[in-house]
Length: 146
Image (cartoon, rainbow, N blue to C red; front, side):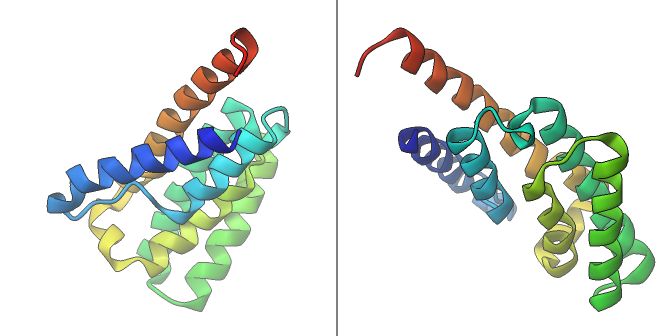
């Protein structure tokens, strides 16, 4: 399913070209990990749609909250990661790539302007596109011989 991962990153990269004038990007590192989960281990708990979206949105919001309350630095990083793990355990939505979203926000100055919109973009929005692509690729795989 390497073709699915390639197509996913290529699609997000093309969207980057469109969004570049606005200073936005869709190809964030956690989405590379999402591709690995979706296209290599599609039956794993981390690939469940509930887990993916709950964790992506929740962990990103936790990152924004930690940055807002604690500012940049080691305390915000540590607190946001611990809170993200607790959130995923509490909501039963384990999705490891989402744990990197708070760190990305805290350390990514160009993302700070998104504020709480960061909970939906680029992580959750990218996941939506990758999930549609995964469903399409697996449909083709199951119904056509290549």
